[in-house]
Length: 457
Image (cartoon, rainbow, N blue to C red; front, side, top):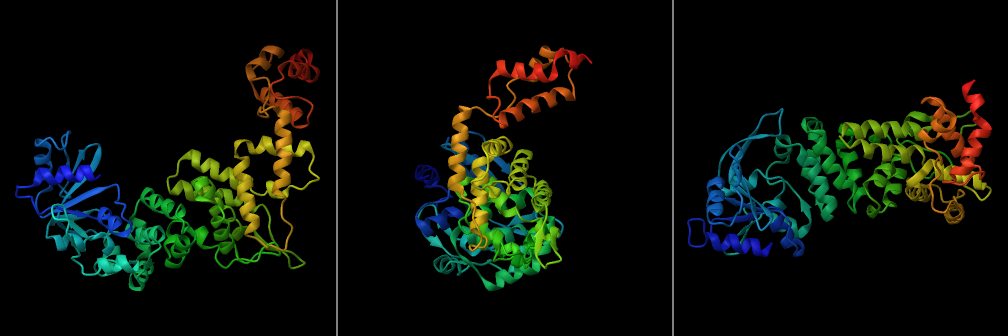
C-alpha cells in the first residue's frame, strides 16, 4: 500500500493537485487506531475526480482506463493491482424511497458531513501527512471509542438506513460504544430499513455474526428494533421461558450457544446456532403436570431458518447446510453409552460429512443449558464413532451397487424400486451385515431378496 501511495504522491507533486488530495475513511481511521491501514484506498478532492483519474492514467500510474461514475462524482483506478477510489467532494440529498443520493459538488466539510460516522470523516493530506478533523469530533471519538454520526443522527439514518446496521457492525468490530443519541435514532428509524435490499442487509448481518462481539451485536439489533425488520422470529424468542433443562429464556440461551461456537468454524455453524431454537416460540406447550414442552421444535426451527435465509438471499447450499444441522441438532444429544453399533452407524449415515459440526453444535447447546441436568458424553460418542469408522475402513455408508448395476443385475426398469433396493443395502450396512464397497456380497443380498423371478413377477 505504501508503494501505491508513494506513486500517487510523486505523480501529483508540482501539479495543481499537490496539497489538495486527501486520504479519507477507513485507511486513515485504521492507521490511527492500530497502525494497520485498511485495504481500501479512498482519496477525496475538491474538484473533478474523473479528470484526476484521466491524468493518472495518462501518466501511466493507472495501467487501465479508469471507470467513472459521473452521477456520484467518483472514479475507480487500479494502481499496482490495488483499487483506488477517487471522490470529488460532494453534497447529497435523498429521495425518501431510495438510498441512492442526488449529488452536487461541495466542499470537504460538505463531504465529511454526508459520511456515516465521525471516525470515518478524518482526512490525511496525501502530500504533507497532516491529519484534519473537520467535524471537530472524529479524533476524540476514535480515542474514546465512540460511534457517532457527523450530523443529526436521524438525518444520517433517514438518508441511508443501511448506516444503522453499519453502526452496530463497527461497534462489534472495534468494541466501541454507540453514542446514546445515535443509538436512540436507530430505534426511531428502524422501520426505514425496509428500503434496503436484502443482499445489503445480509452482508452487514453476517459481519456482525462473525465478529468477536456477535452476542453484543445481536442484542443491539434486538433492542433497536432492527432485528424485527428482517428476522422477527429471532426477536420473538426474547423472554420465552423454558423448562427444567434450561436456566435461560430462549433468546439468552441462543446467544450463549452462539458465543460457544468459534468463528473459526465458519458462518454455517454460527447461523445454525442462531436459528436452532427459533421454533420453540410456536411449539411451546404446557402439559397437565405443568411441564413445558417444545415438541418437534427442531423441524419448525429449520423451516423458519429456511424462510429468513431465503429472504436474505443466502445461497441454496448455505440454506441446505444450516437447515440440515438444525433439523438434526437433537440427535447427537440423545447419545448414551447404551447405544448399539447399529445406532451409531445410523447416525453416521444420517449426519454424513456434517457429524463434526453436529457434535460442536450439540456441545454448545448443552453447555448453554441447565448445568445441573445430565450432559451428553461427547468423548464417549467420539470414541464410539472412531471404532465404527475404523470398521468401515474410511468408506461412506452408501449402497455398494449403483442404480445401473442393480438394473443390469435384475433386468428391472428404472423406477422407485431401484431406490428401495439401494436403501435396503444401506440398511444392511447400518445393521453390520454388509461392508461398504463390498459389491460381491451386495449382489448376493439383492438376489436373495429381489431375485429375478420376483422382479419379473
